[in-house]
Structure formats: C-alpha cells, structure tokens
Amino acid sequence: MDKNRGVMSNFFRSWRLRWHIVSLEKEKEESLLRLGKRVYELFIERKDWGREEVRENCQEVLSIEEEIEDLEEKMRRLEGNKPRRICPSCGEYIEEGSLYCSRCGFHQKQQELTCSQCGEKINPQDKFCPHCGQEIKQPSSHKTEEEEKND
Image 1 (cartoon, rainbow, N blue to C red):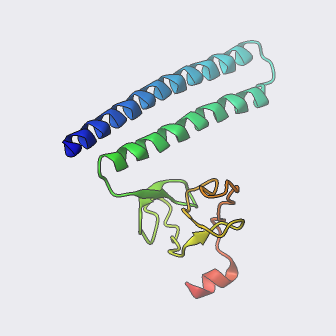
Image 2: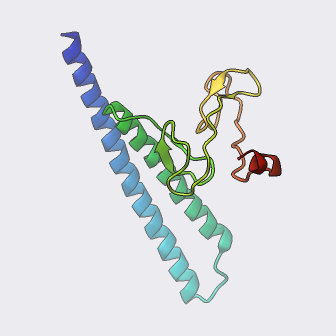
C-alpha cells in the first residue's frame, strides 16, 4: 500500500513539474514575442535601440530559461536518473562526478565546498547556502598560474 502511495505521489509530482514547465515555456514564448515586437518598433521609428529595455526583456527570458532548466533537473531526479550539476565555467549540466565538462573542457575540482558563513557543506550549483541563506560566490572559471602548474 505504501509503495503504491509513493508511486502515485511521484506521478503527481512529475505531472505538476511538467505542467509548470509547459506554462514557463509559454511565458518565455510571450516574452520573446514582446522583445521582438519592441525591437521592430524601435527599428521602424528609427530610434535608439533602447538598449536598457531590450536588456531587461532578454534578462526576463534568461530567467525563465533557468527556471525551466531547474524544473527539468528535478524531473530527471524524480524519474530516477543520475544527479547532475552545473559546470561553474559554462553553466552546462554535467553528470555528477565528471572530471571535465563535455561542453567547455573545464576541469571539475572534486573538493567539497563549504559555506563561508556557517561552514556547512554546499553544492557547487547552489546560489545560496541551504543552511543559513548566505549568498555563495561562484568560483572563477579561470585558473590561477599556480593551478596551471599543478595540472
């Protein structure tokens, strides 16, 4: 009985995530249409391209894309797939435990990260510490001269 309850619970979680992804994709499409329409209007009016306005619209689309990626990763885990993490260099999802990113070739350090405020373990893709809420500064994608020598 408990097993069936767990299966049904996963089914409903999966369904909710899929529905949320579909609604975000629609929101993204609407944002892209607004962006294209505004750029076209600025072109026809021969006005300055309204860089700030365009940047805000692009940022809105990027934010939606990030949320969709996060939801898709939750779906993968719910379906029993291996966990993935985000490459700190290029932002691509890679398999947990990978030594190098398949997209950019960045060497993935296998050391544990800890929060600078509370000292608890954190994941490289975390933007905030799940224990104390401290904002986490993402590691630089550029190696120092000392790191280059050690590789």
